[in-house]
Length: 278
Length: 245
Image (cartoon, rainbow over the protein chains, first blue to last red):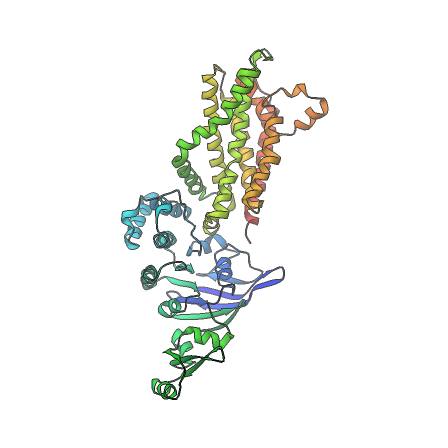
């Protein structure tokens, strides 16, 4: 479980996080959606002890991130945005060092590494140097690293950024499997389809503030079910409809070019913040 | 409190093992040049305290090398921090700042000891065979402890990798030349000797040389080295704690 109460982070003249409060239950797949610079990574950095908070508090599985820092750190695995693997070490060595950082003894660690390499489908690459792996493989090694010590919480900070669509879907499947095994997953993303496909609940964050928290279905429903995008006087205009029939009726009256599509989380974000996520 | 230090040390050793075949020749280049230029060519007919200049030079080079190679761990930390983001992995792990510093300092000391071994083998090839006893190694170990501790602390304070090169220019190079490696400090005026007395390398070179020549080194040198090392080690722990945003 993650409990965040009135979390604030200030840098000189900038408030990166403004009084954020959230509760995320065990086993939940929670997506944190917002544009670049909204405060997503700052939240994760504070929760994982990489950045000091200015005020407020947070607990991971009941352990305070400031007062019981080392116990809190044992509760989670972290997959950061940038690749943080040792390029000069092999896949196995990276996982081994990671396990030792979490005080695992050699025998159970070796067993766990083998299990994880099978899980992320990299068994045949165990002795390959990380610098020789593709971007997608590196991501999977990072996920395996984060799982070595069997954490109950997994932080994924933009886990599919820079991956091709095929590899992205492979990582999504992996994330779903991890969540189904019982882990709480806190996922930051600016990919709409990622949040829609994976998350049970979504928080919109903008300029350091939580705008709303709800299920993707409820957030989308607030706008309608279907949308028509068209260009009016050089500006994109979107009209929303509750049913396909209403949208078809509207279409039949239009002469200009348009795009007809299902409503998504981007529409909901736009309606609530006046901005696009990407 | 120090749980997890072994993982930090092990990581550095795994990387060092991969690079060792490249690293050993690089440790040998500068000392070989110093031995040829200063020891073999310029100092061929020179004696210092009834020893050949080559014999004077080798323990000094060993002390200097224990300083430079222990301090070189700061470049490794910086690369891991600024380019590969690996330092964040350690920050996110359930290990204390003390464990992190201890692991990196031990790694720096190991590099230093290996580099000193290379120098002693080179010295042997140049015909220098001295007494490398317990007191010699104690001075080398304490010196490498000081500079590895300093390296970890400074690596946390610098803001970019280019700042690191500046530290080498301002700290390591002057100390290497003025810490009693190449000439006896007694040749300098009193005020300079008094000033250089406070450099750790002065004491390390003095103690290592005395031991290598079969004399009994001064206990005060070891006490000073240990005290400076302890101060730098504690300061490094503080610096690691401060390295969060």
